[in-house]
Every structure is written in structure tokens, then in C-alpha cells.
Image (tube, rainbow, N blue to C red):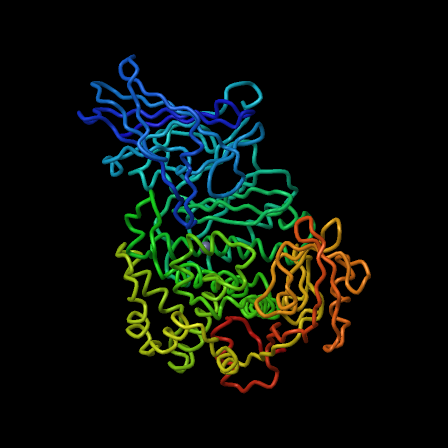
Length: 607
Ligand code: ZN
């Protein structure tokens, strides 16, 4: 058994104190290490850099500790119980690490729990204490770590884990949060919302339950767990989630949560429900159905797989589909979401340079470390991966005359690889699809995963009575979908050849697309455009200035590159046809309508 004790020792200095007790230390000394990355987020983050102080003692005597590399320590041999005491700086408000101030504390085990090399398989015991002082006497704790002893709900105390990997897969939130619970198929589901907000938590419970049930029905059962926790951090601006063994950590805009007394599904709330749906689907897909290489993943360095299209792409496909199938949104709203994904993929020239397999493999350095050239260089295994899932689903439905679908494949993957915990090899999915459905998807998979060709979406949509059209964007905020006006403003706006944002001096180019008008004129990301043809540019006027040109016109652009004023001659281009609309086809035949019903699970005949 490995013993840990965690306490926020100084909320104002953002410091957690951790004590680690190792009984019967190895005769040649104990080596400790902290992970460099957190499962589910494929980037080296070097969490050990946040360890501020570290000392060791044994039976009252100091033990020498030597740092071996950026993330590991060697303690000198000793007889008795080795105690390592360390402090961890926690000031990263994300779902991936740790955060502590006087309002709350949050941590992932990967940020706080040193691993004892050679003893990762041993059970762990963790005592978690609130900060000292009257100001923190009301603090509660929310986590799905198993409780070691009798514990009042939401109270601090002693927790346990079967081994180190389990220990780091149950993030912990502490403070004064809003809390509610609901039952899903006999298992308690909780939601804890931290941060200032005025959300209708009862409505959240009512909406989350059918989404959870939709996923459970797809896989046939809920994985075995005591309870499930949606851990939400509400902030002014933020978005993200990370999946765990029996919980998820989410960060969202407080305005995306449903307001009291409001019944409509706003675009922001739809996005939040989609995020919850996404992370819940991961309970099966990636937490239990896993690439073989993730099973005993080395947390000290990158672990490479080409399968993230399956784990993130398929999950991204089902997250929004479950909103429709569970009745949270209607078919038109789902068509809009799907059209926006297609638009996002089409607008990236990087899809012509990188395959989805490569995107997955290089996630560590490319997808997770995107720079201004990302649209020209990479494709997302989330968004294109979800279109691959869509194409697979519609192909299986069509080729099997409606007898099978991707749902059957996912259920088989759960039974063969999830329940059994047999990891999936890099090339095994194709055979499972053919075995389960009788449909040979080898050609489609190789086109979709290993080439940069576009997917045959238009003809697949026709088979289920969905209309498909590509058109020119109507305005800088048009991200696709038939809805006339975009629901909310994004930070980046668009003109042919570039994305831009407002700047005190004019507009700043954020991304410049390959072979677009801006790049051909010599403009670069970071350039601040002051004027077009001598007229001042602002966020409001810029699209008009660029759009109003005749194609033959040459536009004179004045822009700062760093502190140097430069002049560029820009030949405007026609706006690209890169915006997608989808709709339920009214004139679809009965066979198509039946297929559509089987797919979407909602009656779509009355359109
Ligand atoms: Zn995901």
C-alpha cells in the first residue's frame, strides 16, 4: 500500500502540500516520478515543473534526494517508513492539471501524486483534507475516488484506489459548489458546478439523463461503476473537457449553462450538452475500448497511435447525434451542427496535406501545438474523424440494406475489447466491421484514413434523404448550416484568404491561407492592416472593403509588420464555395425516409 495525504496548504499562494509514505522502501533506495502527460490529452506538459519543494525523511532523519531528470527523483536507501513531503504550485485553470485559490481547489492525480517506480500496481490510500482555517470550514469535496471508510456525502476523508493508474483517473474538486444528483439505470449520477453561475441545475439533470440513456442503449449496458460525476467549472470564457474512468471534468462559459426560467436550447447550451455527451461516450470509447498501446501507457513520454479518429472522431460523431436521438434538439438543429462540421473540415487546406491517421500520430506536436499555419498544414482527427464515422455509418446502413449500422460495430467493440479489456491493434477495426456487418469497408477506410481525398458525403446523404449543398459564406460569421444568421460571434472573422480579429490599430491577420489573396499579396499572420485603398480598416469595415472589389481591381493595403509600415498590392479573389448546408429532403422516397428514420431515430416525415 502507498499512502498519500493531500491538503491545500496555502490557497493564496496556490500551493498543495502532499505527503507520500512508502513502507518497506527498496534496499537500494526509492525512485519517484511524476507523469509528463495526462491520459486523454496528448501533449507533454511536464507536470513536475510545478513541484516547488521536495524533502524526504525516514524515522525522523533526513534522507538525501537526488533529482535524476526533469520528472524523477532518487531517494537514498533507508530502513523504516520513507516519507516524502512536497508542495505543488496549482494555478492552471484547465481540466488537465491543478488549480487552487481561496474559492476552490481542483486537481488531477497526474499533477499531485508522485509514482513510486516499481510499485505502480500496489493499492493506494489517499487522505484529502480541506485547507486549515474557519474560512474553509464549509468546503465540500466532489470526486469518484472510492471511499475507504464511512464518509458523509461530499465530505473530506480517506479514499482509495486499486493502483496508481486508477488513482490518477479520478480528479478532485473542493470548495463551495452547486450539487445535484439523478439516477440513470440504477446508478447515481452527480453534477457539481464550481464558479459563479446561476444555472438551472434541475434542468441540467433532466436533460443529461436521456443523453446518458441514449449512449447506454447504444452499447447495451453502462460500464460497472459506483457513481458518475459531471464536474463543471463555469467561467466567463472557456471550453473543454477531459474524460475519466467514472467522471468528467468540464470547463464552460457560465452563459452556456441554462438560465433559470428559460426553456429554449440556445446555441451555447447545445454546445455544452454536446460536450457532456462527448465525455460520457468516452466512458466506453477510449476509457475501456482502448488502443493496445494505451493499456500500460508510459506516462513519461509520448505514446503514439494512428487510431484517434476512432476514439475522438467516432465520439465526436455520436456526441451531437445523441442530442437528437434523446430528443434534446430537433432534426433541423442536428443538420445545422453537421453542416458546420463539414464546413470546418472543407475550410482547412491542411486536409490536402495530412491524412487523419497522420493527424492522430502527430497529435503530440501538431494538433496540440497549433500555430497560425495550422489551417494550411493539419486536419483535425476530431472533425474529419467524425465525418469518417458518419461516412462509415451511412455506408454500412446502405450496403447492408438497413440491417446494420455503426451502432452495431460500437456494440461489438465494447463486447470484444471493452468488457474484456483487450486492447485494439492499430489495424484491427476493419475486420471487426466486416465481421459484424458483412460490409467490406476496406476501400472507404483506406480512402478516409490514409489519403487526403474528400469523403463521398453527397451521395451518402442522398441515400438517407438529406439535401447537401456547398455555397459561398454569407458574412464573416457564417459557419455553415441553413440558419440565416450565426448564433454567436466567434473571435476570428473571415474574408477570402484569411482569418482576422480586431486590433486597436485596425485588423490583425490571425491566419493566412495557402494561395489565398492575402498570401499572394505577401501578407502574413500577425500583420496589422491599417487601411485598404487609403481608407481606415476596422473589424466592421474590413470584410466590405475586401468583398466590394471587382476581381481585376488591385487593392493597396497598408499594414504594420512588427513596427515596420509596409505596402501590399492585393488582387481580390472570388469568395470560395466552402460553406455547407444540409436539410431534410421533402421529396425523398419512402425507402430513403425509412433509412433516415433508422439513422436519426426521430420522425422526419412531417417536414
Ligand atoms: Zn474526446
